[in-house]
Image (cartoon, rainbow, N blue to C red; front, side):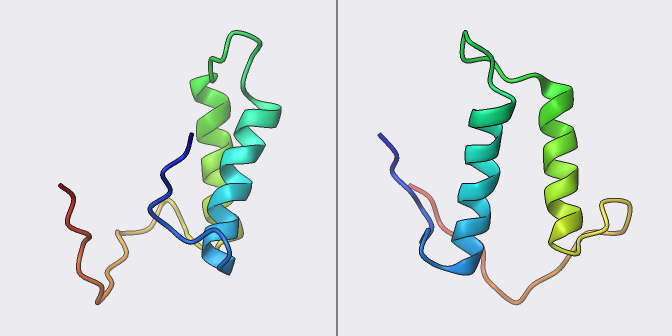
Length: 69
């Protein structure tokens, strides 16, 4: 069971869900394993689709990091 820490009904949340579901549907093997290279490729493409250049510097925001218990 998922205990989501984001809202999947937002556009950003839907992007996260799409990435996860794509990995589950297209990368996960019959034993539940994820091929690391395939996951990196999917994540790199996902970043590119969002306009993030993985070869550029880090991205800064004005949002404070979430506090976890």
